[in-house]
Amino acid sequence: MNRFVVPAPLARLPWQVMVPLAMLVLFGAAVLYSAAGGSMSPFSGSHLVRFAVFMAMALVMTQFSRDFVKWAAYPVYAAVVLLLVLVETLGAMGGGSQRWLNLGPIVLQPSELMKPAIVLVLASFYQSLPVGEIGGWRSLLPAGVLIAVPMALVLMQPDLGTALAIAFGGGVMMYLAGLPGRWFALSALAGMIAAPLAYFFVLHGYQQQRVLTFLDPESDPLGAGYHITQSKIAIGSGGIMGKGFGEGSQSHLNYLPEPHTDFVFATMAEEWGLIGGLLVLLVFGIVLRWGQLVARRAPDRFSALLAAGMTATIFFYVAVNLMMVMGLAPVVGIPLPFMSHGGSSMMTNMICIGTLMMVDRWNKQVGQNGLA
Image (cartoon, rainbow, N blue to C red; front, side):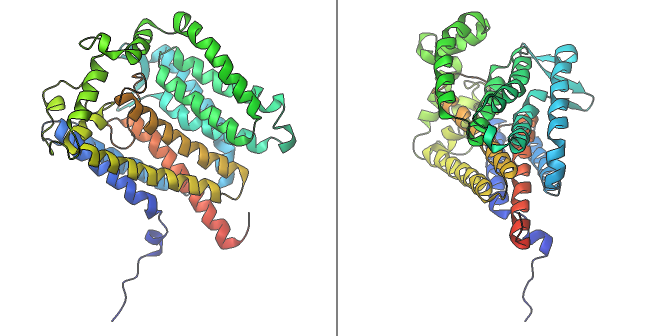
């Protein structure tokens, strides 16, 4: 009797992350199906198609060599900065903000691409910097400029959530590169001092209102606090087991705003309850843990920084979205990875996954060859 032999190309795929990802996307598709009133259109079907397309893109990315990725770091960063500049001159308006480029059949949000691009360029920068200069100004000033330029362009759109994501990614890369801890303490102190000034002189009126709503959403439950109030009602009403698939009243009766994008977790929690929420957190934990292991096993500084930065980017998405829908953070328009409906978010997170899969392949090659 012949044994079934799995073809080598299939056996080499990183199933330990592809299976959890597929679970998240399929669960997200089910939630989106319910949010659309029991229809694959317009959310669920396109969600699955996007995942399939971007998973194919991620698998192509795994074939890139380390030398090619290092070489491409600065050109990729420059290209995304150029796209951000084009947004200011040619960008399309949406929701009161100018964030998209209309490229015929594709509507692109370049600020999303900067989240993985900043990780890539800083990984290249710190890999090329001599270890002896990590504690000096040469490790801080150029990196600060690389972070500040896209942040300024994104804030002009205006898009505070994405600007914070870029800052978070850049800060994580600086920390992982080994910059002195006192610099981060001083930065935190400066941030505490600058926050009130930024509130009055930098933030737009609607952004100021979001901060006030976060601090006291019940002060205006039918106005500025409506999103948070309805989200917490939806999550709380799900209880332990949920109301049942397709039985969510908050989303189906249009009480919950954006039930298919920013507040998809609230839509899910109402129907699947605490059990569904814990399942989602468990699967995200598996994905993030895998990314952490890929970074730890990396044979060189560039690969380790790249993998850790991409893992941190996914973590930022997950953490901010969950805090947002539970009223623990202001509403900043950060979707939940792999579950929310949205092409730009799916693309960004799949670029992160593709990069991690790529580094994982580099790790295996080093293990097989016994070389760094």
